[in-house]
Length: 108
Image (cartoon, rainbow, N blue to C red; front, side, top):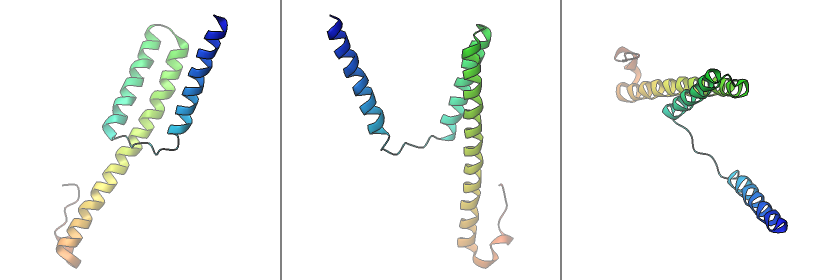
């Protein structure tokens, strides 16, 4: 029985390792700002749970995760605003040519 359990455990570990390293070669999908925001909110809930249950380890891990997730969310949000504004400027430049600034209204 012990030998059977060892083989099962070894095969599970091998499958998990192969899957982990095999999927590392594939480019990950980009998360949207909504997904990043939801991740930060979820990790904030984990932090609150750890604080309410007085579990230091869960609270600290949740707090660090929340900070990292929020930082990534805010960077993505700023990048999205910049690219959106750049697209708007490019549209005005293409439509109105050299005189595009007379028609361009930032942030509207």
